[in-house]
Length: 111
Picture 1: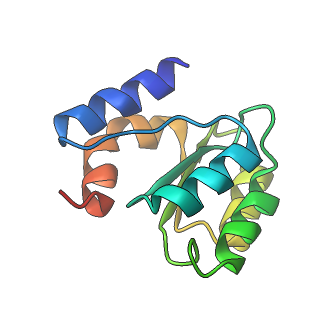
Picture 2: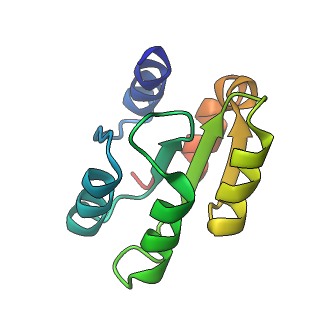
């Protein structure tokens, strides 16, 4: 949850709203309903099967074009690769996501 707080703070600085969702179905339904500028997925979060979720998001017209940025501890290289293969726009280790957060988010956020 510390990382979520950093993301929310970065979004505040960009004058953007962040909506939290911690389960795959919740993420999918909110993405369909809200049509966000960006979906950020923590690959290490329990309750999310990220490749399946990304495949599902990419297969529906309403969510197909929404950029998806994933992050994960560096040790989970297979998980990071699976997210990219499934259709994630970008995948970062936590350290890179933290150090480049404003730049990464700013690329996708439409004010």
